[in-house]
Image 1 (spheres, rainbow, N blue to C red):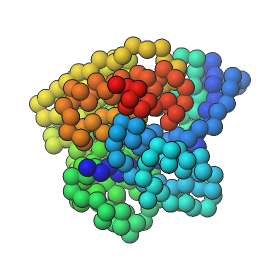
Image 2 (image 1 turned 180 degrees about the vertical axis):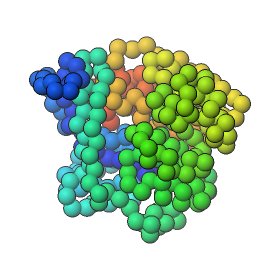
Image 3 (image 1 turned 30 degrees about the horizontal axis):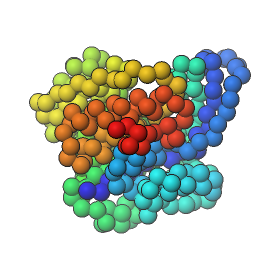
Image 4 (image 1 turned 180 degrees about the horizontal axis):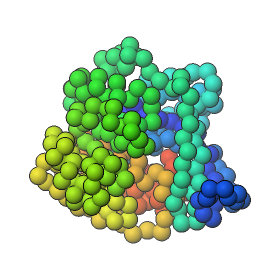
Length: 290
């Protein structure tokens, strides 16, 4: 089975700070790093490092060599990565002394795909293959509908959680991968079990993975619910924790492994990722997880 990721790729500018800057405040950073990142890129790398076969769909600007090298180094297929003039998408991240982060993302309007390009890409994939989406690339709702019509399994991480999420064909999603904030926004509930109840009522044909950080994760498919505790570690940088979990979950679920085993491996992988700095560079290979 093949997996696509219609995903963002950003040049991450990371600042190490004692605390996340407050309104009106000026602080000094302890350090600065420039890394490959973006939820889409992180998730593709996580799928690849988990053993999955993945094609990334995205756009690189003239400064995108660091992103292209990250894809190639991780054996991710780049047939549908295109280069454009100007700069790639980029982010500004603050990472505090406890490993928590604050992120600003900027992408120019040209980071997009046409209908014809989407149709050409989908012509190389078959029903039963899968596609991953976030809310960071322009025209994602259009491609999601096309992919669902083509018979692909749609995996959706609705991040960043904005009003635009409700323009997506959410009834065509096969798996929602959400944190507490995203789950609450989609369901109108706050308690984890009530979030799952509401998601089951609104999207009865979809599975749901609800990640709760250090509190673990719930997985719901039909009437089946599984809880996976988190592994306690000292957090250094939580930037790619959710992306790591998603990538490992997607790779394992699509290979047909039992969900309990898939969730256990995803929890281990994300625990390793938060224990060291960086986004894409923090994601462990499957051999390390095992």
